[in-house]
Image 1 (cartoon, rainbow, N blue to C red):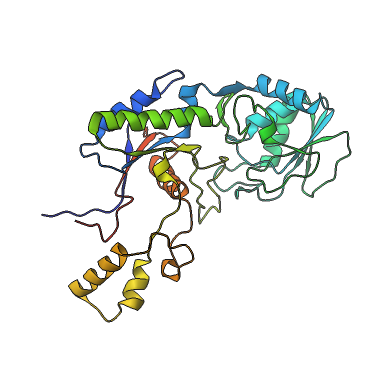
Image 2 (cartoon, helix red, strand yellow):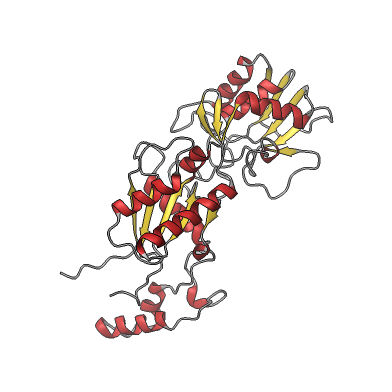
Amino acid sequence: MNKKYGVTSTGLIAPIIREGDDLSKIVTDTVLNAIDNIEDRDIVGITESVVARAQGNYVTVDEIAADIQKVLGNPEKIYLYCPIYSRNRFAMILKAFARAVKSQIILYMPSVDEVGNVLKNHPFTGLDYDAYYKEIVEKEGKKCLIVQQETVMDEKTKSVDCRLHLTQVNKGWFTLTDFCKEKCQYGLLGSNKASEEKLKLFPGKDYSTRLIDTIQQNIRSKTGKTIEVMVYGDGCFKDPVGGIWEFADPVVSPAYTKGLKGTPNELKLKNLADEKFKNLNGEELNKAIKEEIANKNANLKGNMSSQGTTPRRLTDLLGSLMDLTSGSGDKGTPIIYVKGYFKNYATEK
């Protein structure tokens, strides 16, 4: 029986990865042991979590607090604007701000945060984040004021815009990228709780770039095939029920091989079948569509024949696929192998 497949995304089980491990060797060995038919332009994704862990890209709450005092000048009060509502993403950062400030934290917390989490009676966690965040600050011996209307602070109060994806920042304000930036180009953006006193930062671009290049070279030397490799974080998709955007990382992919640059260059198969070749059927229809795809323009940007296709970068689309495949819990598959992504209906065998 001639079985035919399109795109497949497979989670590969890997060892538990620790700081200092040779991640390029672990990924290479995992792929070679799991995949029998490695082909050119197959894609390997490594979740940012294990990349940062292997890199040892950690920082303690005390270290963050010290850097906050250094950057803000040992402030009396700090105004935090629009923090994300997340125990994993922001609670530890808030603890560091509370530890750094002299007297008071002022939090502007709208009813819904930047990525769709609700302030009170969170549907999935059951938390009231205003009470939870206030408790964190007060446990550090500081005052906490929660406001739900935008407030203009006096010049003595240091203001930090805590949003994840900024288009502009108020003059004189700081952002989360201004803290711990010596350890990570993204600062505190994309950090995750590692323990009650430690955070894992987003992986560094230089380390990630060396990693993906080494893995690509390793696979080529072992198989003669040139695969593509990327580090992936949140895939940027929205939960249709909870209304939450899965995009708390600064970027989807901090590093990827050059074959993953650009956007898809695809024709809309549905439109070909419903419009241009609506009078054809069976093998005649199949042949016509395959010829249309095989002879498509190398750049369809602005061409109406591509209407309805997804206008996103390849790495962003792949990041969503990989993030959904690996999940964020206990599956134990931090390495994702994607086959057939660059094939289409015309290249079907």
